[in-house]
Length: 202
Image (cartoon, rainbow, N blue to C red):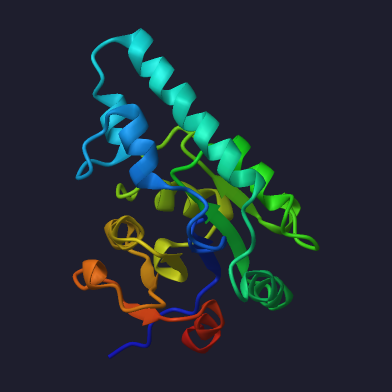
C-alpha cells in the first residue's frame, strides 16, 4: 500500500481545541435563544422564519461569543504546538463556526502568538457552509495551496471529524476525557493532549 501523503497543513478548530474548553456555555446560550438542546445553534438560527428574529438571535449569539472570547485562554500546549508547526514549515489555519470578531478577540490572550501566527482563519463570516460541511476544509485547502489529503483537521467535536472526512482530509479528535458522546466520532486518530499531534505528522 502507498504511504499516506506527508502533512503540509493543519486546520484547527478553535473553541475547546486551541482554547481551554468551557468559555462558551452552550446549554445557557441555547436556553437564552430558545434553541432545543439537541439542535446546533447556527442551524437553529438559520431556520428562524422571521428575518428580524433571525438577526436578533444572531446578534445575541455574537454577544455571548464576544463575552466568552474576552476570558478565553490557550489550551494546554496550543501555543507551543503552533510555533513548532510553523518552525517546520507546516501551514497552520483555523476553521471555526464562531465569528471572526470573537476569534480575533480571543487570540489577544495568546501572547506571544497572535492572529498573524496563522496562515488562514476561516469563520462563519466566510462564504462557506459551517462544519459539519466539508466546504470550509476545501476552501482552506484551496487558499493554502495544498491538497485536502495533505491536511489534518483537528477538533474536539464530531462536527470537526465529519467536516474533515467529507473533504478528504485526515482527522484528529482531541478527547482528553474519553467522552462517551464522542465514541462514534469516526476520526482517524484520537489524542488526549495537543502535544500528541506531533507524533502523528510525517
